[in-house]
Structures are given as structure tokens and as C-alpha cells.
Amino acid sequence: MIDLIEEIENWEQSGRKFALVTVIETWRSAPRTVGACMIVDEQGKMAGSVSGGCVEGQVVKAAVEVIANGVVKTLKFGVSNDDAWSVGLSCGGAICVYVQPFFSTSETGIVVWQALKSSLQSDEGCVLIYGDGAVGFYSESKKLGGFPSDVFSEASKSMHQKTSAMQSKGESTYFFHVFPPKNHLVIIGAAHITRDLITLARLQDFAISVIDPRGLFYDSLVDLVHEERLLRSWPLDVLPDMKLDDSVFAVLLTHDPKIDDQALHILLKSPVAYIGALGSKKTQQKRVSRLLEAGFQQEQIDRIKGPVGLDIGASSPAEIALSIMAEIIKVKNEGISF
Image 1 (cartoon, rainbow, N blue to C red):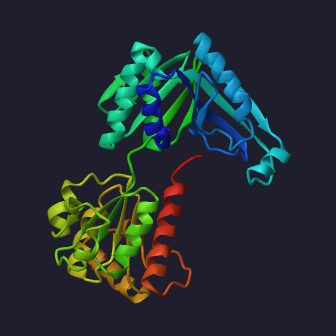
Image 2: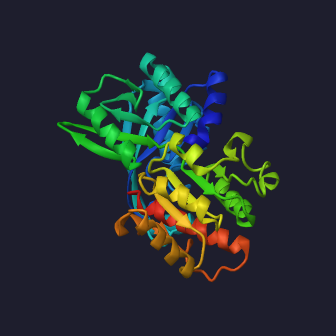
Image 3: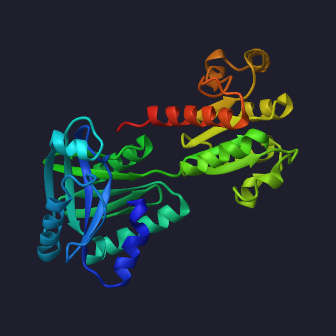
């Protein structure tokens, strides 16, 4: 839905009535993943997609009916092998979509919509809850909607698992549409590789921070990273104040043990999703020895990806950055259940 926020606001401001359609389940090689959305107005005009073109025509008809009568619908569609080929798949699948009037048609919905926009703007993780024809909202700071407490507990679990999914509770079934915080790339060390790595991370919509007390290469990064996220400080001075959770991916690029080790002493005690460190196998062996001497256990040290990056035979800074970003994406996706 995030890619439709601007369009939704435009439709709202123009006074258009419209429905929101969300993919809530998929089977086999469905064209879109769970959580994919589209909006449809009274005239059948649409934005977004739920199948890449396979079933949009049928969904639009259902959405127009939902706008007219206000009754939500759950629809399941099979995607034939021929239709699958038309959207670039090798075989068919199936999708289940939830069609509802857009939130602004109810008092609770209006409050939920405002809460969602606020959470997205502040990069606070949140969950939309659909069930029993109603909509709700969950974040660590807010709960909206008349759902039982165990439903909000499930929403919390879904948010921490970063997984949108259907859940059955008693005789009711709920869909939890998860909007996790942005993934955060923390780079220790401004170097030649840093610019290429930031460029790739921006394409994947990562938030980015760069930490380096030396301030090297900072002038070459100001067009890519907000100035307040270019931190000319020692890791010890800034990392303890950062939110170091499983949305953080840290990469150490300085080659300087005085800086890298200071960062590692903090990162290894945190639940960050990824720690990568530049350097040869010999450099990594020395790093391991220093950390063992500092009292870290081998199990902790094994979290470090060193030498950093997937082995693609990279040699240039751009290729090394690509190998690092590929490894980060691999780790990120291994931690998500689709």
C-alpha cells in the first residue's frame, strides 16, 4: 500500500468514493505477494494491482459493488498457466483478496488511516487488522478498533516477524497487514566503497547512517545521505543511542581496528540482523583473536560476515558494494516468511 499513499490522498481530496483491495493469501507462484494493494473508484478506475493483470477485471467489478453496498468481500482467484505466462510466471497459482470500502467511510476507519500515515511518516512499525468486516490498527504506542486483546497480541507478533498473514481466532479469521520500520543500513567508515553501497541501499529503500570519526569522503556523500545521518563521531559516542534491533544491518569498512572493534563491541551485544566487516581472511582471523581476548564467545563472533559480501569475485569498489548489498538482501529475506 505504501506505493499508493500519494494516490489515495489525491483521491480522498477530490472526494472520490473508492474501495481498497488487498492480497491476503497466495498459493504457488501468484503474481503479487501478500499485502499487495489496489484502489478502485465508483467508475471502475484503478491504481495499483493485485495480480499484474490476470484478475483485475473481475476485482474491479466486485470493488464497484462493495462501494455501492458497503459490504466487504473476500474473493479467491486461480491464475491459469496461460495467464501466468502473460505476467512472466512459469506456472499458475491462486490469490485471495479482501475488498473493502476505503477507511474514510467510517469513523474508526478515518482514525485508523490517520494513525497509519503518522506511523509511516515517523517510521514506526505498525499493523492494519482486517476481520469481521471491521478494520483496526496496532503499533507499540497505539491500539485502535474493537478487537479482542488476543488479536492485538497476534498483531504484535506479526509485526516483530515482519510477516503479513491470515490468522484464525476462535470462529473469526483476521488478516494482519504489517508495515515494519524501514531497514536501516549503518555504515562504519566512509570509504570509496561507501558511496556505491549507499546508492544500492537507497534503491532498496533502506534508511542510512554513516559513522566515521575521521570524516573521510564525507563531502562525496552529502548528496546521498541527510547531513544529520553523516556522523563524524566514534561508534562509542553514537551507537548506544541508536535503535539497534533486527531492522539494522551494519557494515564495517574502515580497516582500522580502533574504530571497527569499538563498533563490534556494541553491535555483537545487540540483536541487529547483520554485521559485515571488510577485510581479507587474514584480517578476519586477527579480528576474531582480538574479540576472543576481549571476552566475546565464538558463537557471538560467528555472527560477523567476514570477509563481507557474497563471493562473486568482486574486485572494484562498485562490485564489492554489490556483493555486500546482495548478502544483506539475502540475510534480510531469510528472516522473512513469505
